[in-house]
Image (cartoon, rainbow, N blue to C red; front, top):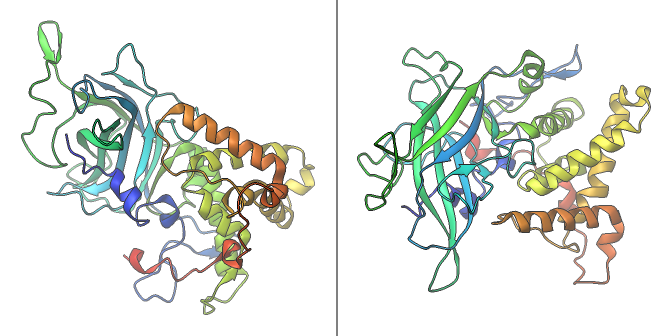
Length: 389
């Protein structure tokens, strides 16, 4: 058991958050973008070539708790693109988290529910540029439990594995479902069992060791066109593909089409700013997707086919649903829920505040924070220095 899980990258800094990997990256010369170009003839983003795979976490079997009689409050799987090396300090993508649905009847078996919101969906889109045989997915099974002495919540990695994405000749691994063994200790430490003192189950007279069942598949041709406009390297839920696609088009029009690239100052763009703020909040992502889909259905066909109208429509939905949730005068949502009950409470809170719209900002409850134009602005160059690779 190790407390040095990939989850610490999400808590300690913003480098490996999804919002950091959504904006375009600068090229080596720093005078253009590496993975974002605008096609003036087709009036759309130029597709970015990358390797696309769908990773589905099906089940985790025979995994013991981090401590005997530990009070487990959450089980989750962290994953990130990395290379097969001697440490986990170097990640090639953002870190993504999948929450498990806890089962008191069989606590050593982790199951996942598909199409149940961004918190729990086990299907992940994986986009990676490199085809190096050492590139793959670092997958960690983690438990959040209460410390008996301090009552604080502690996240511990109870098992890890490495899923190669490419064969030795650089060809992507074939589509298949496989069970990978889970190891103990820090990632890439060899020869460490999950728990030597824990008696595993026995199947047909043989001990069943901890393992994780994963499916690797390709995306459909229909989705490939949408996925090709996502960042060249990203790891996120398949439910977020359309939302991220909307963001990439908006940021491309703002940075490449509507303004001069030499202007590196602050851009007043509520759409870009609010979408970056909600990217790390699955509750807000689910809220936006639902409201945007409902309001778009009410539009006339001519309006839905009008790019300028849809641009304004996207901004209006964000300002009426997301802005009241991220402004300083609204109830704040924590970034790291631990139980499904808390997730449901935050979803209900988000629904209530979004239903009130801008009125929630002027609520009598809580202190009032003066409006800052940075809440609805975007600084394009500031975010790019550490991702200039």
